[in-house]
Length: 127
Image (cartoon, rainbow, N blue to C red; front, side):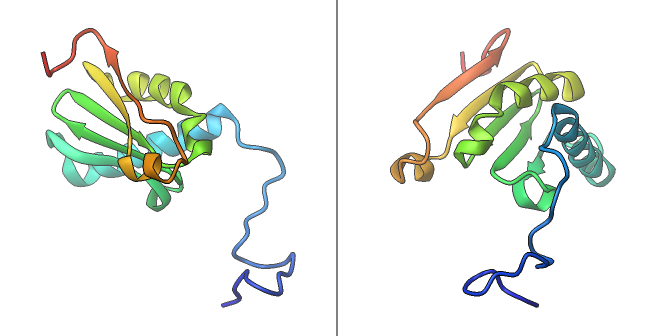
């Protein structure tokens, strides 16, 4: 296996090449595939991880399910820029009562992202 550090060759198998930048449909397909894989394993479990970042080919994105609610975490500025699109896709595909978007404290400490906690939905389960 070749590593990228030092002498990089353009034919490296570690760097995938895409003819076009990713589109919203590209992300929608990855999200749906991730959720379907979890449904096949966990069925209708009330708590599970629906999207697990790099393992689902969605780096920097984590989505957990807790009953009728989802928690969306973004771990990079590029994933953070996709939040509104991710929330829309999750609403359409999972139909949760609400989605809590939060930032990992580690990312805030490293000044990668600003601290945030936003709830999308009719009512928060914490009230």
